[in-house]
Image 1 (tube, one colour):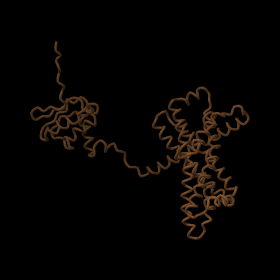
Image 2 (cartoon, rainbow, N blue to C red):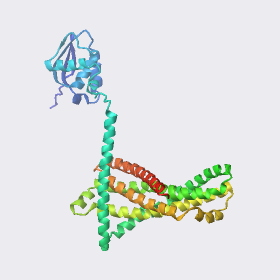
Image 3 (cartoon, rainbow, N blue to C red):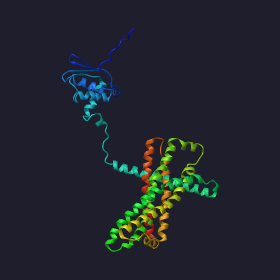
Length: 374
């Protein structure tokens, strides 16, 4: 027995001089493929001088009403049969000529920039308070391990030293060497104008050992190892490993933050010395090519140009930068939510904040050492 197919009810039907609209005129009905195009064409062929009957419309929302309103040319026809609710919807469209989106669009707030500035400072204060609490807990955990040395996590610390220090030797060597070449080349051009070629050793030594070496190594470690730490902790949040550790009573600070902070505090000064050595080597080679100064003379003059105080300042900066990068990376890693979008934003924020913090702390060190005459 064949099945009888019932033709669907047409939403737009013309009978004589009357255009009848029936069925549903909602966003759900218009999301079907070709529904908007078909209804717009059917409405446009109705003509402006005919009557309209919308009493057969079962459901009408602002999206469907806006489609009909456009076909009417933005004004209510002279002959139209509408229910009271439908008339209220079209009256709202008439009161807002810009359409539904224009009516719902929020008004411009002249103080929006001030509110955004306040939100930014509030977020910064919240992150600062959280990192200060994390630093205090880290100090307590470190002091606790000093009294119980058998509980020191040697394996995680050594693994982090390998990942953050040994595996970063290549990139720091390359960038340090190239920075030394560029700095020596540019300095030689200026010193040659005054006949002070031999002062290139003092210029390179102080600038690299005291400032450029620690800052350059910290920026590279923040972009390389800091982002890796944040992403690692973020993945642990996504896979609910952090929640499992909390349920089992395992401290995040002692198991995750402390090994990374200790490892970066150890590896960063070593990376600073490594970056200084390669940068000075590049500067010596560039000075030989540009000024004709021998590498042997450069190395003999270097100890007199760089005092032990400059080396100590560079190492102190390395330790501080390493602990700061570890603290910031772990902070933003633990704040990541269990979704991929938060993971990407958290990693980016961690790197940017780490680099900004390194430069800010370096400026504070410069002011402090300058005030005490170092």
